[in-house]
View 1: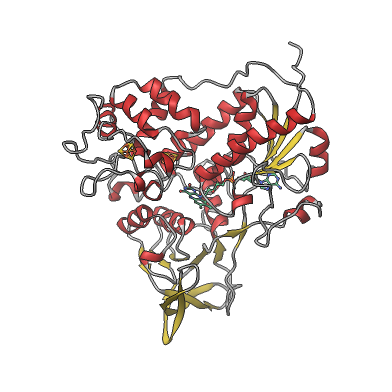
View 2 (view 1 turned 90 degrees about the vertical axis):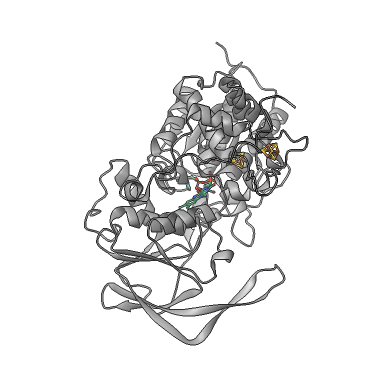
Length: 478
Ligand code: FAD
Ligand code: SF4
Ligand code: SF4
């Protein structure tokens, strides 16, 4: 065992400093600070260098975690970064926003009572340092190919695939309907989890690597999928899932009841310095309002915490199951509670009250019943248990489904599953259309950034195999 390691017995777990509530609840800055140099090495040295590292097994990218922890413990940060970057295109992003408690850290085998190694914070540290010191360079392919790939969607899935294809020498163009690259990283996830400068920096690196971006270009509207198939040797669809799940019931059409993503996009745009028409006094701003957010996932957590920062009078989160059964990360629930959010567990909306604009939510208490075949407990309303929450703004955060891509692209031959996600061959990543591949949320349904990166990398490999089989790849003249 290397002398620097196995310090978990003598060195307690330390997470990076979290900014005090009184400070962080009033701005959109990230809440965790980066490790100080010595602390990163100390924390990395707690790893016991397992022969079969369960942390890596449970990381969707199978990162070589013990290797970069050992190098960090030894102060060899540049080498640590190179190993981290070999399996992950955006380690500083995953280090910030992966739900580590469910993935790598949740499976660290350090004995109970000693707490896991703080893997995510170390991953962020080594990559932030690498970026700061200029060790992260734009991609320079060993050879330029004439073959090209078109990617629809500049989210983490599309961006990771673009990097991997560019590395192999492909000409890559990413088409995105937004005006900025990043997908949900730029317009969904709020600044306090992921500062936008981190995402913009990755966009700049991609451009410097020769990846072309056609922004403000909605495929199916500004250009057809058929046209992209003519332009490119292969096309990757990485469009994510954006159709919000709706709530019905009396009053659900009242003004002041808004979809989560509209709300988060407006806030992110405002933070990016964009002019959002009517934002200061409009529906999409929680300042001075009593806010009720409906839902229990990460999107709901992002909405409640955004409302706190915008200066809401009160923020409540209504969720039909209990704390133990909510899908959102426990770390985010804890952060929200610290910031003053009130959780109303085991409660579901029945009706929305108000004349033109919403003034309250009538809710009913729920109880958890027996588990179904999937093991998930049923939830049933408790008769006569109604109550009302006053609200000037209600944010619907019940999750997302895929848009109707065959209709959007005018391609009836593009097969979808019964959930509306794209059907792909699980080995080749190809859809039902030859030469058209798919990756990320549009295949998995709403998932995680780290899975989108994994899919993007895998799809790039399969696209390369496909294009190579189609034709001998000519190298471009210098
Ligand atoms: P996306 O990131 O959705 O990117 C898709 C891109 O495709 C977008 O830029 C979109 O504009 C573009 N596009 C769509 N249709 C078209 C079209 N027709 N033409 C051109 N472009 C198009 N995951 C985590 O791991 N940690 C978190 O903390 C976390 N928080 C989240 C918070 C919120 C509010 C939300 C909504 C999701 C969160 N997620 C989180 C999930 C994560 O963001 C997604 O799983 C991930 O971004 C999916 O990546 P993707 O590349 O498949 O799609
Ligand atoms: Fe953990 Fe995510 Fe990093 Fe994998 S990518 S090691 S799951 S933080
Ligand atoms: Fe180190 Fe924990 Fe991974 Fe084992 S499981 S290699 S102790 S981080």
